[in-house]
Length: 122
Image (cartoon, rainbow, N blue to C red):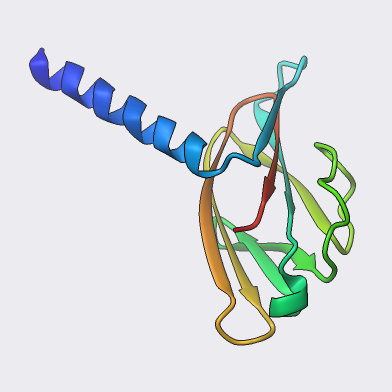
């Protein structure tokens, strides 16, 4: 029983840490009963890294070619500065590689069923 309580505390602390590390992430609850969530990704690093190839769970989902001028809205259409995809509930492993060297970034982002999450690539 003590192990179970300890496990719950560790998981809660881990989730709290994940949320606090990415303060710019925006989560909106959806009204539909969808089994999927929506993830919108953007970056302000294309100036330094060149075009960014974006992978979610090791699958290429698009390229970011330009910086955003402001945070895109959740579910914004995919463009040269933002990528929106539908994902299953859970942690999404996001990795980017820049066309210039030394620009590899990765992050884990939680997306729930029916939620829309906007997150910068960091």
